[in-house]
Image (cartoon, rainbow, N blue to C red):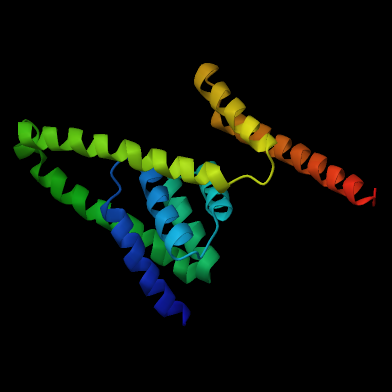
Amino acid sequence: MSNWKKALILFGQFFKFGCFTFGGGWSIIAQMQKLYVENEKTMTSEELLDITSVGRSLPGTMIGNVAMLYGYHVGGVVCGLACLIGMILPPLLILTVITYFYSLVQDNPWVMSAMVGVRAAIVPIIASAAVSLLKSAFRYPLCYALTIMAVILYLAVNMSCVTLVVIGVVCGLLISEYYERKELKKNGTA
């Protein structure tokens, strides 16, 4: 398949994702998990988690970064730009229309009630993506303990995301080294 054809398909998929961005970027990650990991099997949960981690660590919007990184992973710069443009076009169009008509609907109880319902629907979508990613994201059991520690440090101590990423990198290197040495000893090559 040519890169341009692949880019067009990705543009359509990310345009569709962009139409349902309610709840922020994490709901898009849930949709990507469903389509690319579970249905098409074009990437693993581990790869999606890696792309999400890098996208979250870069400046800019997390989901814009993830879209660009995924597209680049699949087909280079052209596909990355197709994913990014496909992702941002629907919200841009929707926000343009909403901004234009906002004064007409800001006090409408039907519109406000609908938004409450949308928010309530997003929580289980995001939770299911998180559970799916956690089930298959880690190679080593200690990574689950690291995840729990990071959540506690973030929520209880209000540790910055940058610090958590640095701690994660260091701990990831140490955990990998530990398990690789353990494997070498087991095989008798150490």
